[in-house]
Length: 224
Image 1: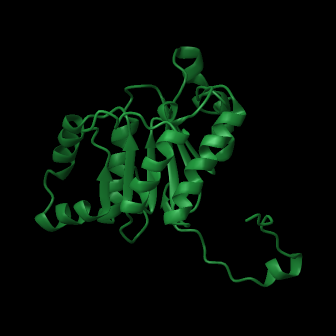
Image 2: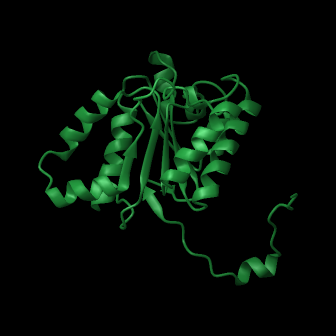
């Protein structure tokens, strides 16, 4: 079925009563895309897990509010083993009540890399069915993808491949939760000169590979 692109008339748009976007944290809204750039080993995964933890518990993170209602967070990745995740979960659960830990259990799920093919998460035709089955089994409000390089199908510097991968991710996500948010964790450039570009006019050059990922996001965080 070929559907036309969504369009609205000027006066129709002016009359519409739209629900304000729900902010997950720090400018990242449900229904939109966010990217977190940072060097390997800097702590992108733990940062994302901390954001989800605080969001579910109704706590701010880094001095900024999180969405007031608990959201469902699904972490899909290929780098962090079940032992690493268990260590992080135990440390982040320290001092919490049994009720709070149970609430986190209801709202956060993580890819634990227990099967021989669990690390193969690139958005190709063979893996698309596994992605779809995973999302249908537990539809998230927020999908966290970590890292971008392992999900990207094609060349790292290809704008076309980057856009196709993002489109396929969003298409699969919208089938199960149209208003869900997508946050991608991506590696940045290394070295003092590149790190200096994390802020300011050169920030678009901080991330590795195609700039299409930077352009597709409505919220970008750079960690350096």
